[in-house]
Length: 121
Image (cartoon, rainbow, N blue to C red; front, side, top):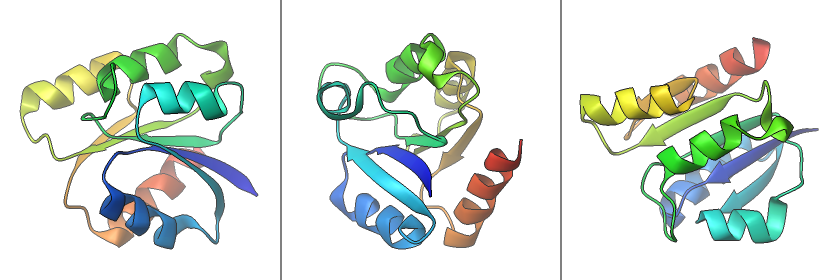
């Protein structure tokens, strides 16, 4: 089974992702960079979904940069999904290394199709 890392601090959004992807992926959730490093630092994933606003010391943009500089994440698609709708946030996320930037709320079918598309690349 493919593995998905979801870095999201909103519980409702986590529940939605779990419901959408639990039959297709082994899911790991973290609410911060610290939780990710404590639990999953050396685990290999097929795809990562990350929010910009997170608990802890690093935001999603900083984590995307960290992932892009980590050989363990080479070639792993990074999907940034956030409530930040400003163009500057999108530019920052894409410049950091996100493959796709989507804003909440997002249609479940669009999300599923986006994930499927990223995995085909």
